[in-house]
Image (cartoon, rainbow, N blue to C red):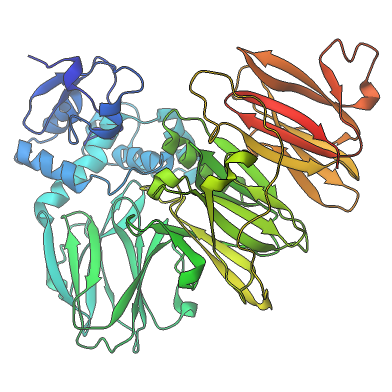
Length: 604
């Protein structure tokens, strides 16, 4: 009999055979063939998000499809299926991969296991002759067909696992030629095994082999990695002979001794090479994982890291002249990600999706800080709460530019509570202006930014570094009763009104009442400021001539900015309709939080 409800906390896990999540009411099997009927959990479910009942499972229907394809070969045993589940388990929760799913469906279309199923619809030999553009359209029309994935990719991987064996740990000599075999998974080529002898290569088409030779005086080994394992391995003498291959992460192993007699220890699971490390006896250094095969050199005093946290995957942002701003995503009073602007919209959308995936129904804030032409970051600090350690100290980034513009990427702390704060400067006397940022905000295993560092331009050294930023003394809006905190409630952005020429507003169309959540302000000296939040994937209005007026409104008890217009459209009923005219002088402050949005103007 199937088990029900309380036994089926599956979280983000997927079927071993088709990689789809379980739907309410479907029957699934665990590795021991026990049946479960999936019931929908209450939202949010702690057990689903942190402690899934089953890490390896598969749809009963997928299992029946797979078994039906074995006419003469032995049917996969429960142990075979469990081994496949472990081999294809991810090292961390990956971002959604629609291209990978399409590639898996494509393999199913051309698999000889689906040939007779499809023969009344089309011929595979004719389908192969279609231009790639037409084939891509057909695949999009087919969608994520489960039985094509099961009979194509999963069926092939099962056969490959039987040939290649399960998990093994071996030693590899670097003194001779190196032979690798590869396997394709979700449209990506991975190293499945690596050896000093070509005899382990199979003639089967799913085991293509290639050989590598180490260049003399090798100084670095670069491993391209993702959530499944190692995609590629490069041996390098200098940075000039390295190349990025589209992998999200690169492990850089520096070598200072001769490696003619060195060995590497490799771990693979029959399908994917999971890890590589140099054996003892040779001087080496692992410079953690980076988003580029050309990691920067970060001095120890320019790096902040919560001590007890594991070594992170770091993303590097070079602050060249093409970077015109930084977007910092905040959650629960902490920074969880940083994105440099402008970068291709595809990368920005990927950043948004990664942040949303990490949020798990928590509220996100998007703070955009423009960097104007000729402007540099001169000071950068980490703000923490005194007396708290680790994530409970709520570390957030504070930076100051050469034009004395300062922003805190975190909640506003009232002036009378400033004594509970401490600041850690990422710069010391003599460091140059900040030329780049590295952080672990894109590390899929990091909940928030717990490691951040800077690189500096030595040609623009600054003799004295300020120990902490100057404090704002604005009176924050009131906090309603009901669990709100003075430490995490309100975020603040501010801008001058003197010299304002034009504005653009950002409208959040994901919310049903379409609130205006932020402003881009353009000045007569060609500089740019921001107020509120800016989401570049949402609506950005046309430019509006200053001076402007704003219209306030209320939705489910929360104040918000409904509309922003130029005052040339004003009429006598302006005050009655909730409109407020913004003057030409002073400082305008935009407060935002889950409580609502407030705009206030202060005299200079």
